[in-house]
Image (cartoon, rainbow, N blue to C red; front, side, top):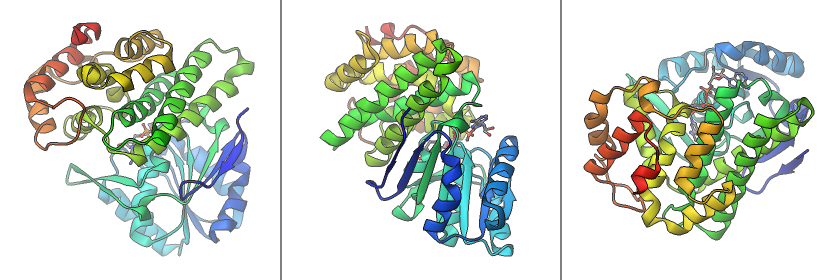
Length: 358
Ligand code: NAD
């Protein structure tokens, strides 16, 4: 079983099974004696467990975290932190809860400890997406990066299979786009390949796992999520992330499932212009062709493969393509409106990705 601590990237990482027990010691390190504990309503029991664990250090629990970090929710949580004189924030959950933790700590300048329970990777990025009046904006800065991440593999065992698949493919997407990002370094390339290998291995192992092997498979997935999150933090993302941001922000599609459907199509779009990156992905997942290999991996795991099935309407393809091509950004192949319309038509229907490459 993987178990380690790391301090190489400006934040402290504590990784292993049962590491939740380290939270009181880690709060001491941060100098936090009165923390506000955050979760979604669905994970209120887990927040209560953390509150019991930290005892007197628990100033209050706020269980209203929600997708896309709406500023009204942040305002209520900031008020509670002030009323209870909190001197630290503990976020326990997925990217939505971590987002709320970032939004509070950046406003109040408090230390932030995260216990991730999905594979989103937000806990290791200096990026915060917030929604004001229904419009999602993103900002970034070193003060947004959490201070300590306690990766407890045990906390991920409750993640349902469908979320496990989509969240892990969301992480794969960070690493794939890092491989063909502008200014990618040798270190990021190694980290991305390591992430994709661990995530693909973990997903296949978990699908086949006897109960005794579940924790090892979950450890691979969480480790891969950490490495993939670091890739997301290190370099700018391309077509895949920009398109998913539009589909999630404007058309309210679910975050991780949208990434899961779009990834093979975005890869196929870029394949001819990013041959070396595709070769690395194919080798890491044990496939001949990277986009088709990712699509069959998702199919084999029973993950979503068509945007139409996620609630996206065919009539919105044109508007989505307009929005996704409104501002230029680095991408291996130039991003054109026609190209994005074609990609979305195929992703809407769940067409075999080999057809895109052809
Ligand atoms: P999420 O945090 O919205 O969680 C989805 C649901 O799963 C929630 O109901 C949650 O309570 C539940 N859940 C989480 N872990 C669980 C577990 N172990 N067992 C049972 N239920 C569990 O989903 P997400 O995909 O982790 O995060 C998505 C959000 O994170 C999006 O808003 C996205 O924009 C953001 N994000 C931000 C960054 C960044 O770097 N800023 C990176 C990735 C994602």
